Each structure stands twice: as structure tokens, then as C-alpha cells.
Image 1 (cartoon, rainbow, N blue to C red):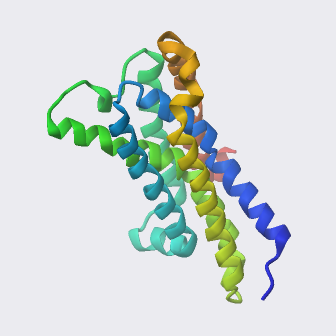
Image 2 (tube, rainbow, N blue to C red):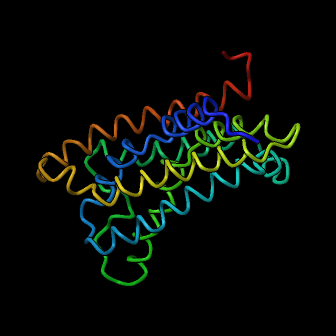
Amino acid sequence: MAVDLAFAASSFAAVFAIVNPVGATSFFVVLTQDYPPELKKRVIGKAIPAATGTLVVFALVGTGIFTFFGTTLPAFEVAGGILLFRIGLSMMQGERPRTQLTQQDREEALQKEMVGVVPLGIPMFAGPGAITTVIVLMTGAYSPLDLVQIAVVVSAIIVTMAIGWVLLSNADRIFQRMGRMGVYAFSRIMGILIAAVAVQFVFTGITTAFPILK
């Protein structure tokens, strides 16, 4: 079976655009601005595998997961939106997310490290939009079974996440010229954008669940 280059290109473009690793890198810079380099590496080591695994699993068995847990994609969108809105609001107010409180004990260090899973890996990298995208791309891969198409979608996810890993690993170099005050100002701007994305998540989830509201 030959690889459909048009489908491969469109799949990568769709996954890359919706994941938006550049925007997620900006969020990473703000979220971890007071983290030591070693802790930032551990956060990246949590974020990328978590996001990659989430998208690959949903690409392969996404509809089955929602059916098994008795939930829907709109519910996931609303939950992710509420989580992101809380973070965006704290950033707009000049506060640090609770995961950034400067406690030195091991429990707090672990909590800081886990921001790589939530909210950086999920839902910033692997959000409702990305999950929907990979599920839709896979819809034609099972009827009939097309292993090449499945491989193309999974490869698009892996390549996008590899780019995200590179961007996160070099985030400080990319943003170092902003200075501390620049980062704080940028934090507030990002807070507004993240809050807007969060509201859109909630709005999309509600209107999808209740089409009459559109």
C-alpha cells in the first residue's frame, strides 16, 4: 500500500496547527519561569510523553474510551476549559499558579514536576481540539482497515511532539531577551489568551452538547 502524500501532508498540518507547540512553548516559559533548569527538564520529560501517549491512544481507540467511561467529548472540552480558565485568571492577576509556590520540600517539588502532565501536556498540547482532530483523521482508517493511514496519523502526532520537545528544550534561549519584567508582562498577556481559549473550549463543549444554542 502506497502512502498518500496529500493525506500525509494534510494530517501533519492539521495536527501541528491544532497542537500549536509554539503557543504551548510560550505557556511553558511563563509557567516555569522560576524553575531551576533540572526541574524544567523533568517537566518536559513529563509533558511530551503524556501528550503523545494521550493523542496516540485517542487516535486508536478514542470513541471507545468515551463510550467506556460514559462521557462525551463536549464534557471533556468543558472540563479542560474550566481548568485552563483558572490558570489564565491567576496569570492575569499577576499571581503564580499554585504549582509555582516556592516550597522546598520533596512533595512540592513533585507537584511542580507534575505540571508537565497537567496542564502543560494535557490540555495545552493534547487538548480537546487535538483529540478531536486525531479521531476525525482516523475515522476512515478502519472501514476498511488501512494500516498505512493509521501509521500516517500516528507519525504526524510523533513528529509534532518531537518539534514540541525541541522548542521546549530551547525555550529559555528563545525568550531570554525578554528579561524578567518582560516575562511578567508576557505572563499577563498569555493569561488573557489562555482564558479566551478556555472560554472557547467551554463554549464549544456546550454548543456541541446543545446544538439549539448555536
